[in-house]
View 1 (tube, one colour):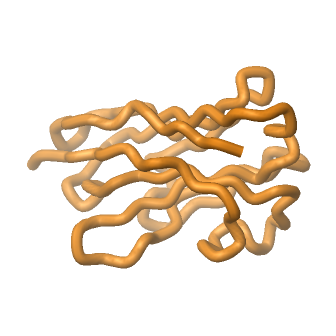
View 2: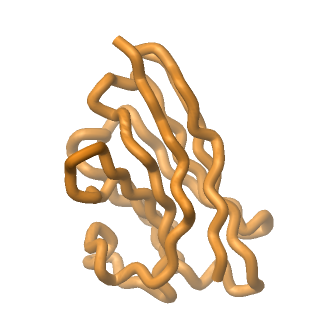
Length: 125
């Protein structure tokens, strides 16, 4: 599976962005999909994930209520709608895929086998 992330950019605090991640291959619907982010000098951290089996979702506390993850299996694409952006959301955002990933491991970086190249999100104050 190859993942291509897009949609990043520069936005003012309080603004919105929508990230997209498109996957190659015909088994996209069998992958739990997630977004992670990494700010300069910091570890990569979990942001949000959506299950392959029932589209259940899981969010980091820091983004809950502001970000929404969704998927369109017909388009092999997962989205991350980001609203009420804050300067601390500034990071490179990566999409990731876990084949038939379990719901209880959605936030675990090491279970994801495939990663996109990242897209930069910068939020100015």
